[in-house]
Image (cartoon, rainbow, N blue to C red):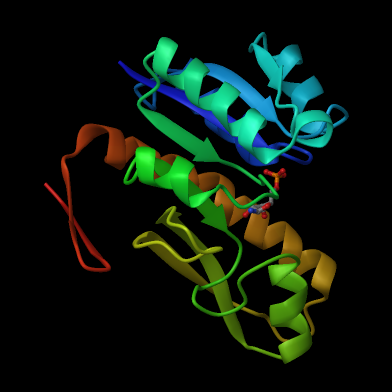
Length: 199
Ligand code: GRF
């Protein structure tokens, strides 16, 4: 079975959606641990509530290099196949990414390359787009930039408010992330430039 570690900084709704699908056997993976750079991330409490092991990475106390090396050691020791970012608000270092290239995945609430970075839904809203969506991608050294695994578009409805749009984007994320990981864990991937072929 595929072994994954989930990294988060916030409320953890994507982590919960993935944990539910792993627990039901729909996604053939086991969550070895949920890690955060923030001691008080609400997602950690939610993970504990689900019976998952949680880890706080000491970014604040000891800095990025130490935090990443701790994560790397744990991932090696425990035979983690994939690092799954779910609202992790830090950029991983080139050294870390290089050591696990093609085995780190992220979700972003826009149709990349539009609106990378924080508050993507708000950025898209402020820009006035009529179509936005969700992207699942492999992680490289740049923010919200690696090769795309899946995208799904969503059309903003006439008269729709930002709150409703956010709700629909998050619902789409919860479905698309699970669907993409399920497919990913069953496939062999070939990365051809920026294009990914699932076999
Ligand atoms: C999601 O919108 C995700 O795409 C982005 O951060 C948010 C995390 O939400 N990277 P949650 O913590 O999973 O609820």
